Image (cartoon, rainbow, N blue to C red):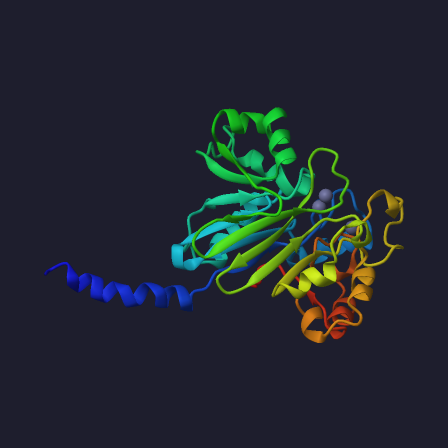
Amino acid sequence: MKLIFPFLILLPFIPLNAQSNPPFILALGIAQDGGYPHMGCEKECCARVEADPSIKRYVVSLALVDPAENKWWLIEATPDIKEQLHLFRQLTNRAYAYLPNGIILTHAHIGHYTGLMQLGKEVMNTNEIPVYVLPRMKQFLQTNGPWSQLVSLNNILLKDLIEGSNFQLDTAISIEAFTVPHRDEFSETAGFKIRTNKKSYLFIPDIDKWSKWNQSIVEMVKNVNVAFLDATFLKSSELKNRKIEEVPHPLVSETMELFESARPEEKSKIKFIHFNHTNPLLWSKEKKLEILMKGFGLAEQGKIY
Ligand SMILES: [Zn+2]
Ligand SMILES: [Zn+2]
Ligand SMILES: [Zn+2]
């Protein structure tokens, strides 16, 4: 008889809590692999950060958070991981564990996975942090030092993502990996569709060109609520000392053209991300406003989606 009482109290509260605290995404970084400012850049773009350090931005990373289960996952382990875990703590008022319940990686370019090194013996010496990857990325980590040591010492526990199938992270959140055309020297490149019990998200930080893909980005955006899309360069004239063809990305202008005839609700789902230091969308109020006036969104560090 005694046991019934606590159950009566608890039952109505658990679902209520889940309803009023739906999962969310918190952007922990929005810059391209080199971050902002960029090493060695003495141009105006990065000189601005010296004058105003508050405009500094970390490399692209998202926190995927489920308040109802008090769990969170880190999407991408960037070279800025230390600052980003600190930022996450600050923004969430230490409501979650310092280390995430898992780390989900897109590909083996330095901005997207090298933060894993902080989990090894030299620093945190973590115990079996699940790291979710596609097959080539898994093999890359297993067979190349120093990452292979994280595997052999069980600092990380590699978990297989299967292209096109849903992986349930907890009762409210699932993630589906797909591949996109990118340079792919060391691994395939994943994009993710993240579904929560409230919303769905698309995350494609790196892709060579939309036209090289066998999927329609316009159709994919129709099926989600928020789409974080590669916005490395605004215009082709941005790189002065390097050929832009060597580092192909959809220009922001090209992506906007694709969505030109889309409805305003569709355009506003797009949150551009992965800005190169040369991209004025990192610092120019006028350029940012131009994009917003055209109905598109810009991902912001520290913002909830
Ligand atoms: Zn990148
Ligand atoms: Zn710069
Ligand atoms: Zn890349």
